[in-house]
Amino acid sequence: MLNLDVGTPVTRGDQPWIATRAAIAGHAVYGPYQRLPLGRYSVEFTIAAADDQRFDSDEVCAVVEVVSEFGKLVSASERVWPSQLRDGPLTIRLPFSVKSPAIFEYRVGVTGSARLLIRDTAPIPTEFVVEFPPDQYISRAFESRDGNALYEAMFGGSEPLRAEPAAVGLGSTLCRQLHFSLDEYRYWMKALAMRPRLHRKEWEWFYIAQCLHEADMLAPGRKGLGFAVGREPLPALFASLGCEILATDQDPAQAAQSGWANSNQYSEQVDSLFKEGVCDRDTFFSRVRYRSVDMNAIPDDLRESFDFCWSSCAFEHLGSLQHGMRFVENAMATLRPGGVAVHTTEFNLTSNDRTFESETTSYYRRRDLEELTTRLEARGYRVLPFDWTVGQGFAETVIDLPPYKQSPHLRLRAQDFDCTSVGIAIQKS
Ligand SMILES: C[S@@+](CC[C@H](N)C(=O)[O-])C[C@H]1O[C@@H](n2cnc3c(N)ncnc32)[C@H](O)[C@@H]1O
Image (cartoon, rainbow, N blue to C red; front, side, top):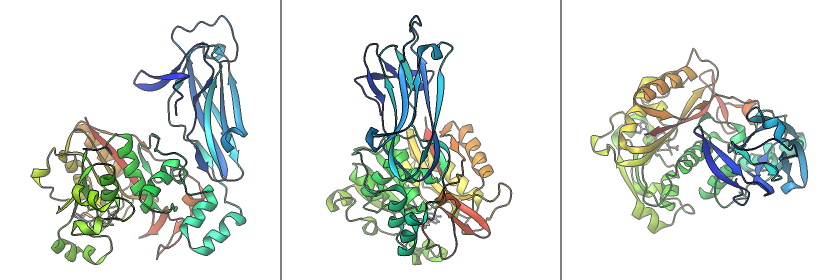
């Protein structure tokens, strides 16, 4: 977050920066108040001198730091002098350890002795090794079989600290333990009237909501199209934020034939999408409509009608890997220029070579999603860059096995493959 008393947002070479003023001291960048579990992390800051900054005196101009307990505990800190910026931008990496779960802040204080540019990137820590939480943190949570108890044991609480989610720049990404530590994760769980757990189902809904929020899509008057919504709470959430939603799923005959009609993940009417505590009844029924749509044959009358579209845990069920990829390409036609599509699906962590493909479910490899990206880009769409980091966090190393009731459940083994969820976000310019 940027402190506007100290800096102003500017763009340099397509990148967002914060320009600080001379003789004004204070924290130019602060937040994001992220709860981190035990482990070793590092976070990066990039600082440059303003174009017309002179280098005749050399007093400390900035301090970058990692703090917890709202500034009481400093985990890492480094001072910056103008002479370090003479040859161009300086990237400072601060490694730090978390020995008990706490709320972390990454901030840049400036002294006002030089006019600076600070890269305005989401300060999500990169490259970290999460140690197994000691017994006292997890045994009670495991025994209780309550996913929220484990979440609270690892992250220290369920309540978001901020009233609004910030932009964290998730891009296209695998489901990561780190995402669960974000205040934004707790924010969207609260908005969905759910207690946070380490579960990839909730991650998919968080991912879709956060990407659409960052693209400024979740605002009054925006029109959204949900594919294969099942009983998910996203139509109610988006309606509560002022959007008009067309929620769709396959028609009842098709659902009966494919078996989805007997699951608790299918809906054929708008009523089953109403969620108490997410959206009030009148708002929901005035803003959400329902219609049957086959993702393999998107009707022409939906072309260029929506600001955004989404699907969660659905395009892997369309018949084959290629069916799913064709759906993602075809769904772009439903968007107006400037629109955004966000989809989640199953990702094969075991192999970039072998995979499981069947009429009912397919697991996407990295190379399939790279092929899909190439195809989308060839049509002029922008796929947000993929973060393929698998992670070594506690929740990233526990593999859930049938009947898949365990917490954490970020990874599972199915058909001899270890899988997780992956999200892809695409812009139509
Ligand atoms: C695993 S459920 C996911 C439901 C929901 N999106 C969620 O996240 O809970 C898969 C959904 O895909 C739908 N589906 C499967 N094949 C479809 C098709 N050809 N067209 C539209 N929906 C389809 C099913 O009816 C079901 O609602």
